[in-house]
Length: 264
Image (cartoon, rainbow, N blue to C red):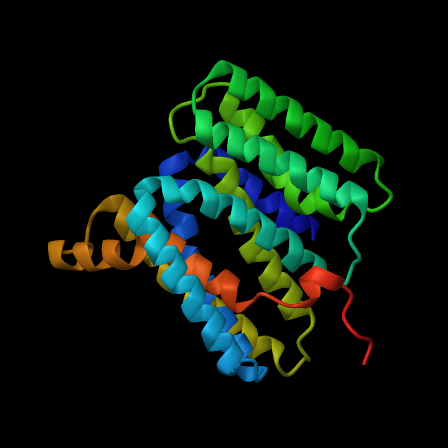
C-alpha cells in the first residue's frame, strides 16, 4: 500500500502535460485489465453491461453538454470511486475520520478546479489538505491518509508554489495513477503462485502498449491519421467517458450498506 501511495509522487516533477498523458494512457491499460479480471471472475453478466452502458452514455451526454468542464465533476466522482474501491479491496470498515479526510480532499480538489489561479482558493485548498493530513496522522487507522490524503496533498502543495492554469490535474493525476498501481499490487498479491506470472505478463504487455502511446503523444512521432484516431480514443474527454463506464461497471450495492466482504 505504501509503495502504491508513494511511488507516483515522483510524477509531481513531470508537469501537467506528461502527467495527463500518462494517466490517460495507463488508464486504458487499467480498464482493459479490470475487464479481463471481471470476465474471468464471472462478473460480466447483464447487470455489469447495464451499468457499463449507463456510465458510458451518461458520461457521453455530460461531455456533450459541459465540454471541458466535465472534468471537474468527473474528478470528484473518481475520488469517490477510489475511496470506496480501496475500502472494498482492503476489507476495511469506514470510520468518521475516513469520511472527514474524504470530504476535505474533495473540498480542496473542487476549490482549485473551480477557481483555478485565485489566491483565496489556493489558501482554502491548502488549509483543507492540512486538516486532512492532520486527521490522518491522529487516526488509529491511516488507510485513507496513505491512499488519498498523501497522494493528493503533497503534489498539491508542490504545484501551489508556482501555480499555472490546469496544474490541479497534477495531484489528481497522481491519485489516479496511485489507484492503478495499488490495484495491480493488490490483485497480484492475491493470485496463486501459478497465476502470478500470467497476471504479471498481462499487466506488463498492457501497460507497455499504453506507455508507448504516451511517448508517441508527447514526441508527436506518429502519422497524422493515427494521431486523429488516438485523440478520438484517448483525448481527455474520451478518457472521462471510459472512466465513468469503468466506475459504473464496478459499483457494488455494499457501498451503501457496508464495506466488509463476507468471510466465505
